[in-house]
Length: 120
Image (tube, rainbow, N blue to C red; front, side):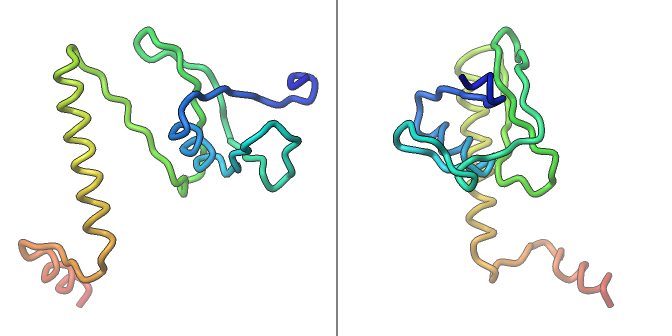
């Protein structure tokens, strides 16, 4: 049925994954199987199946620079290294989010003065 109308259907078991995908392609998650309206359907520039390591993944790629979602793929030789890398990445993203929420923060180490000197 879906192939007949050139629709792609993906089954996601996690609500977090579903919300993330819907946000990235501009779709609305539907709580039950109904016919989606035009406003509820999302779109994506490029969708393909790729292999990372030995794991097949479905890649949703938006060509625009203003995509609200970015994915970092980390690989390592052991679970401990992967956990440390994930924790470090999470710490960096959360620090950036905390710093950009409040407009009163300024960069340190003379960066503000250097930028003001450049603009003058």
